[in-house]
Image (cartoon, rainbow, N blue to C red):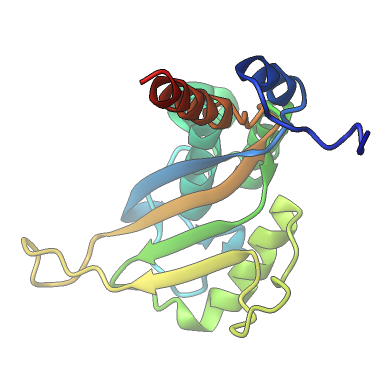
Length: 219
């Protein structure tokens, strides 16, 4: 008689067995975020919750943490929940000089309520000044702590972990005297939800095979 759990596809109607037993598989999502703040008299520069000493001040309504702002937009984009401009408008006095880490907690709660699990983030700081190298590891560790992510990915020879932070010099073509802003590009490339990852294509392919076979046998 054979094993009952071993599905045998003999007739076209047997395809219904595959539909019934299709496993629930995670569906990958990607979110992208971008933010920029001009330099000027305002807030001390903060990146990833870390104050950068001797760096230019930034003009901002909240605490001006441009890195966390871009990260939040990446998370919101991944969950299709809008952006920080809509959630935390700069016209609202409640968000005047508010810590971006507090806003990130709010975004993470919405993100998780959407059924998503964060696996990895990739952040790029684009600025002529300050130099990121002396602060990169401290920023990376603090962002990982804020997100509740580990410090390393097992088997990663670079040891960078699930939070990656890179930097690039910003040399605008219209300004030969240096950059007047700091920009952040953020990507959340591996977040998963619980949507059924259907094997719907598989029965469809088998249906086409059966149709061709029947056409051949009837020829």
